[in-house]
Image (cartoon, rainbow, N blue to C red; front, side):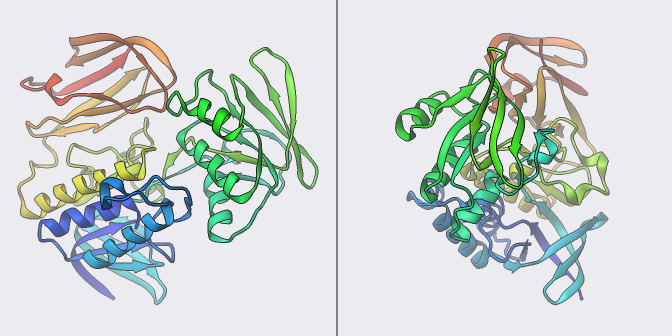
Length: 402
C-alpha cells in the first residue's frame, strides 16, 4: 500500500498534539499521526500525579487525563494510527511503516519527528554491581505502577535530582514504596532550588548531594547501594530497588541512517529556527530536540512546528540551504537552533555541561560582539534573545562560556 499526504507526524505525545492543533488552525487537516504504542498521549499516560493541562485545556489534571485529552485532539484533527512503527526515513518524505496489517510505504510533503527522549538506564551509566530485578528508570516504574497497578519494590534509592526525580517520589508514594534516599552527584539539585526542601519537609525524603553511586549490592535481588560521599567516606543504604532518573537522551533511532543530521552536543537533530532538518521536508520538535522540557513546553513547541510546516506547505519559508551556523563552545553543552535560515532571527536556547560561573560570549565570524558574566546552572534552559543578533550579517556565530 502506498499513499501521499500533506503531513505525517511520527509520535503521538504532547508535541504531536500541539502540531496537529496548529495545522488545523491553518486549515491543514490532511495529516497522519503514527504512534507506536497502543494508546496515544506520550509520557503523561503513566504520570499519575497532577500538574498538567492548565495552558492547553484550561484546567489542572493528572497525567492520564491529560494524555486522553491529547489523544482525543489528535484523533479529531488527524488520522491517528496506533501501533504503527516507522522503520526508515528516506528522502522526499518517503517512510517505511509497519502496522498491525503489515508493511507499507507512505509519502508526505512534510514529516514531523516528535519521538521525544528517554532516560539513560543503568547499563549506560557504568555503575558496577549486580544485575537483578528492582533496577529501573522512572518511566519503567511509572508504567508498572500506573498502567499495571503493581508495586515492584518496597524500599528504593532514587538516583538523580532532576524534575523527573521528584516525579519518581510521587509515584513511589502513590504505590506505597518507601524511599530510603535521593542521591545527587552535584552539590545543588538539578530541579529548581526549593525541590530538595519540598522533598525533605513534605515527603520526608533526604537528598544526599555530592554523593556518587559506586555499586549496587546483593545477589539474586538488590539488598542495597554503596555510595561514596562528598567527605570521601563510604556508605551503604539498604534497599530492594534502585530508580535511575533523568539524563535524558533524544530518541534518534530513526536518524541512524543519517548521522550527519544529528547535533553532537544535544544528540538530537540539528534544526533551523523553523524546526527544519537539513533533509528536505523533515522537521523536528519537542524533547527530541531539547531534552528535556515539560509536557506543556513540548506542546507549545509542537504548535510552533505546526505553524512552520503550514508555511512550508504554502511555500513561504526561506530556502533550506540559505543558512547561518550557530556553534556551541566552552562550557556550553548544546544549543538550538543550530542554524538560522534567511535573514530571520530567533531565540538561541542553550544548556551548560555543569554548573559554572563564567562569561557568556557571542562571536560573529570570529569577532566578539557581546559578553556578560553570569552564573549558569546545569540542566536548565538559558536563552539569548533574538535581538542580540538582529541587524548583523554573519556566516557563523559562536556562543561560548569561558
